[in-house]
Amino acid sequence: MSERTIRLDVPPDEGDPASYLRAASRRAVEQGAERVELLVGTTDGLLRRAAHRAGFLHEGVLRKGRTSALGSEDVHLYAVVAGDDHEGPAGFSHVMNAALPRTRVIAHALFRDTSDHVLLLEVSYKSDWELPGGIVEPHEPPRVGAEREVLEEIGLVRVLGQPLVVDWLPPYLGWDDAVEFIFDGGVLMPDEVAAIRLSDGEISSAHWMTATEAASRLSPLAARRLLWLDEVRPTTATYFEDGRPLG
Image 1 (cartoon, rainbow, N blue to C red):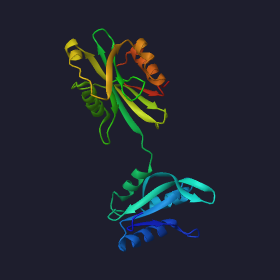
Image 2: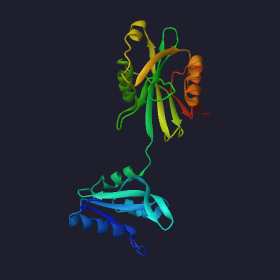
Image 3: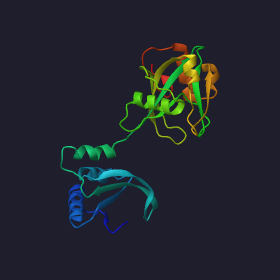
Image 4: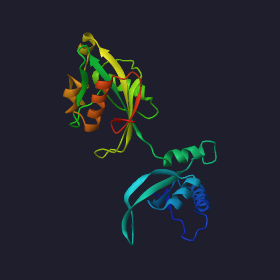
């Protein structure tokens, strides 16, 4: 920690931890601190709520960030930085936005050729193949994210249609849960297929396959979903969970 960073501890007998944290953090900033930190145990819900009320932003979890008589433990890291606006109309929103869960959004596009084959991409960083698309950037609409990824990965400018699937993905191979959109990319004509240019480094190759042929190349979740899409041929969005339509 730098000299301009202060780390607070709440006295165990403090009757109102939120008031204590609010006063102590303001005093530290007035005395020249640029940053005031607080470490909270992962099971200490009362102190976490006090930190929220005092205007501290949740910045993440420090693995084995604190040592006690019981050994090393994970702790939540909270902080106030000089200049933070706690009293304005957005103050509470900023605090809660930092504290509440966030779910990753993924957007892919389903393209077919005139022989009714599906376009799959073989990527350099994992064994499962995928539809064109990827992670949606912060504050980016999923459809726009899918269009951007299509341009980046295969070099085509496409205006995508309605989503065919909205799927909740459970945790998988170290990833947290996510929500995925699959948009209807339509049929690519032979000249459009010939115009495909793969992203250097990220995309190893592109393959046109039937859904049945593709299933063995996909994750189990993606295989279930693609086989359903191939059989049902939906024209409106269907809600999925874990690669299965609800209901």
